[in-house]
Length: 152
Image (cartoon, rainbow, N blue to C red; front, side, top):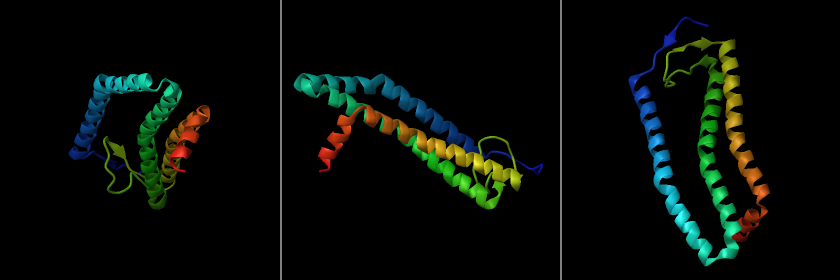
C-alpha cells in the first residue's frame, strides 16, 4: 500500500449531489402524485372488470418489482466492470476512476483483494433483483400464463 491519496474532483462531488437530489425529487413526486393516478386507474379497471382483479394486482406487482430491480441490475453491472478492471490492473481505484471522497491508492495483492470484494458485491446486486422477481412469479403463476398468452 502506498502513501498516496486521491482527492475527489469537484465535478464528481457535484454530480453525486445532483443525482441524490434528483432521486429524492423523483421519490417525492411518485409518493405525492403517482400513486393517486395509479389507484384511480386501478379502481376504474376493477369497476369495469371485477373478475380480472387478481390478475391486475399480480401484473402491477411484477411491473413494480421490475421497475425497482433496474437500478440494482445497473449497479451490479457497473460493479462487475469495476471489479474486472481492478483485477486486471491490480490497482485500486483504477486510473481515471471518479471518486467522491478522499481515497488511498492500493496496489498489488491488496488491490486484488478489493477487486474480489467488488466482484462479490456485483454478483449480489445482480442476483437479488432476479431472485425477487422469480420468487414473485412463482407466487403468482397466472402472470406467467398471461405473459405466455401475449407472446404466443
